Length: 100
Image 1 (spheres, one colour):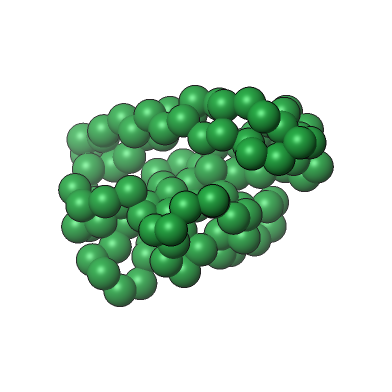
Image 2 (cartoon, helix red, strand yellow):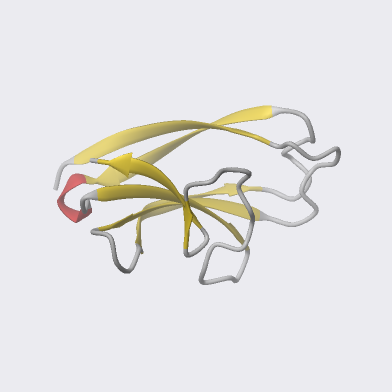
């Protein structure tokens, strides 16, 4: 099916890089449960330095999009987002980007 591209910029507000492999994943939902979509982007250990902004490009299958788009950050092996975003629009660990 068709795909769309989502480009996001994330800032590491810490003073140190992440000390573990980190995955950035898009999610979608309709106000209830949130489901991951597309492929996750890997940030290898210690490659996201503190105080820096990184841009990530995610390919999203348009036929899987719900009404609301989210971004989650995961440590390797986790099934739910467990890396915190410093925003107020958090739901089930996911950062809500808004309606599609």
